[in-house]
Length: 88
Image (tube, rainbow, N blue to C red):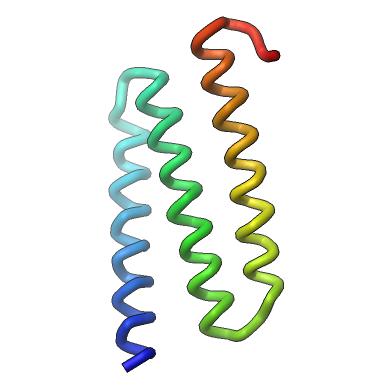
């Protein structure tokens, strides 16, 4: 039962990642690309957390946490630059 749920979640996250990569490539607006990249990093964090839980290794969860923090800072910086044309 647990393996089935893991494989379904991993498959769903992989499909979402593929759709988001296509969205990043095809979207014309900068704001849309910022949102799509932020969502893509969220999906990658979820994949890292799933894999870390599957192999029972805390290092993948640490990497997911670091990626989430860096993605947050990057998204805030990109949104500020897009909105005001200056960083901080």
